[in-house]
Length: 380
Image 1 (tube, one colour):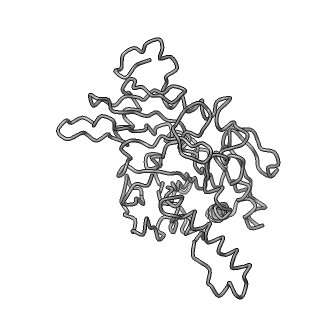
Image 2: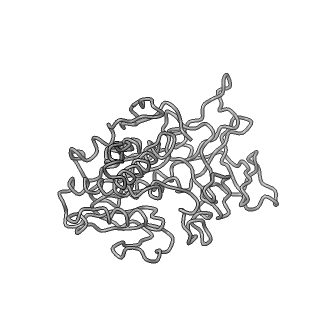
Image 3: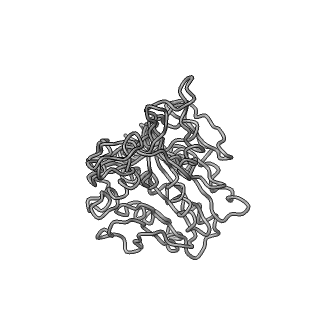
């Protein structure tokens, strides 16, 4: 164990450890946050909880995957980090009868199976192997624990160590694969004239997420893997990191005591495998039929109840696609098992839709051959 100078820690420092280890126990240990029977919905609101429109859109995407696969005898929907199974339940319910008859739902979650879950859903602690279909990870990668580094007063990046009460100290510099990942994906900018990074800058080592995503994608023989999360790309890494906590619906300090969610935004460009494409939730959901246009006022007089329902749907669609909110989530689309590339109609409109950020057209750029939609600002 080390102190903020890299030397041996005094006896009283016992318990400080890297954020990856501390967060893993705080989230998934015997008394961890995700073992709590009340579930994450009691603490934060995801797209799944915001509206059933999200599950219906994912069901449409599953239908696209089914068509791309040639309508196999069984098509899988794998809900990774399933919570209480809300998404997989909604997707199965929204499928047309012909697809539903062949669909098999999997919920992957470390917590126990919730009572009353649709019996068609298979509850697992690990993804099923060698399946064809759609692997969908909504806000999963941001909860794959990782280590953080902070630049010390000498301009040296050091691993951040944390106590159970959230207090931090600096340890040794990262080495090996972690140092290589930082140099490749999150190099810390040197200060003016010094050639060294400025003290106080932080970065998060996303290598565990890259590995988790690669392993997850490897469970598909053919189909599409999708990761949805708050994200950033190499062109706009946040200078002080994104590690944070959520408790009872509010953002709060990331204290690794099991009382709250601990999360950090995802470097989705680093996770992407060959053939992967990045886009925004706004573009993807619009292509899948989720649009927030106000219904015509004439409907209010001809069908008042229908107008109210349409207005409610429009409001929910607007929330799911809103700039500065859920619409800014990144979607990583990873086709699997298509040697000639994904069939037409599977991905094209998901990444070429009308993408806007705060009313401004999104800039497009290439990152290692991937089409990346990057707003002209970083939303936190």
